[in-house]
Image 1 (cartoon, rainbow, N blue to C red):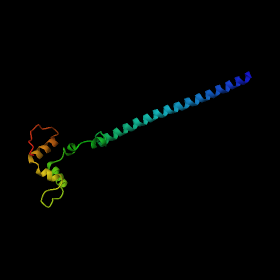
Image 2 (image 1 turned 90 degrees about the vertical axis):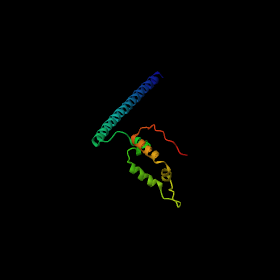
Image 3 (image 1 turned 135 degrees about the horizontal axis):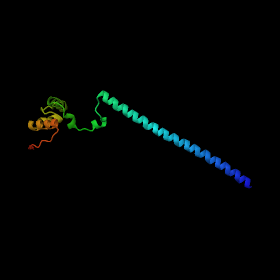
Length: 135
């Protein structure tokens, strides 16, 4: 009976050694994969930065550009272009001669207010001029 326990102990020891070797081998494979993945990602980032420099692209993602407001989009436009855009937004005139849509409202605004608004969009600064509202 004692011989059977010794034989069973040796088999269990051999099984533990085999399992430990398999575990170590897999762990090193995982670590090597992680290091290779990081190396490839760094190389790709360097290639992208080099490509951006060659093409003279400004850094920043497409999402950053989309988050800008209407003021940032209109900022660089000429006043004639803005008026043309407003004419497009205005739409067709009604039978009584009033413009439909946003353009009709803009036509009713005082020209000083519209001019100050467009200049403020161009300069990007807040002008502290007082405007009186006519209600």
